[in-house]
Amino acid sequence: MTPEEVAYAEGMEALARRIGVERLRELTAHPPPDASVDDRSDALDILSEALSDLGDEAGAQREQEARLGLMEQAAHEAKIPEAAQTFDYGRASAYAALGRFDEALRMLEERARQLPDNYEPPARLASVLLEAKRLPAAMAAIDRALELSYGPRRIAHLKLRAAIQAEMGDRAGALATLRREVAGYEALPKGQASPERLADARRRLAAAEK
Image (cartoon, rainbow, N blue to C red; front, side, top):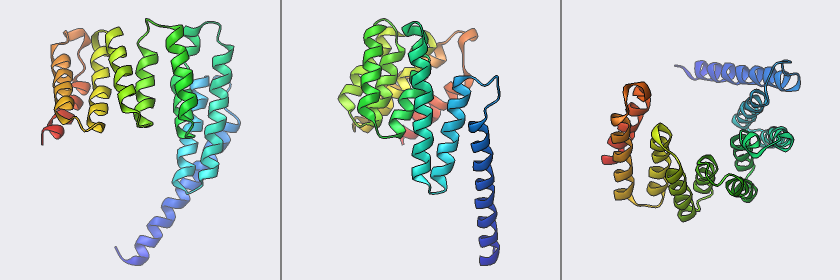
């Protein structure tokens, strides 16, 4: 492509992004009547990412604040911890996007105390701890999630465990965990098998073995 053609293509791409942002603004300002809290949260998250791609970091942060407020209100209005927990992923994600890791951790630690036999709070806690680079604590959390989970969900947690080990520089440990993940998916009965997840696990193992 000539420099003029490259400039034209880049200009068209930027225009398409701006049009997309305006449509997202309209959608988030006036969501459909049947839109769930999760739908509205996802739209705000996508808008935040689009603004960030355009270099509007302040705008991206505002949309994450709006997303967090929406999810916080929904969790506050939930009658029981199990219902409030359904909003924890979005809340933790928004906190992390805003760099407010300590608040995300406090929220998830409290949920783990409320639901001590549920694997989701420690699994989410492990993910946030990994992003915050608090690796030994992340390992302890994911091992707790593995202890509490079973079946395909337990196998899925091995992906995060391997990622934590890799971040810690424990290549041998990460390889062992990835091999456990692949073997776990291979051993699932037909009704629970996931060819897509097995293929993904095999791909990550092959990359780690190089």
